[in-house]
Amino acid sequence: TLADTLTEMQQDLQSSISYAGGKDLDSLRKVDYVIVRNSIFNGDRD
Image 1: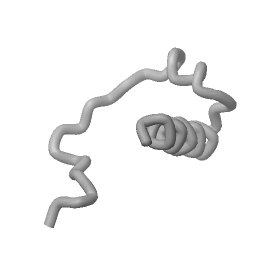
Image 2 (image 1 turned 120 degrees about the vertical axis):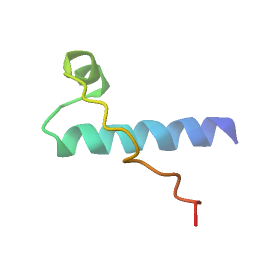
Image 3 (image 1 turned 30 degrees about the vertical axis):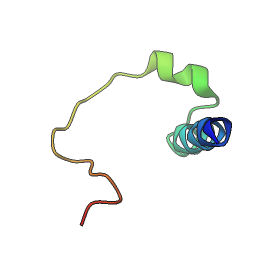
């Protein structure tokens, strides 16, 4: 369901934030972003 997908996305984000040393989703507001083109591909892509 959509709710399950949103929950999974939140958990994935939280895991990434924790790995990077952040504490919660609010940490995203304090991040300096760097866009690296052509570096992220859909996992379903062959």
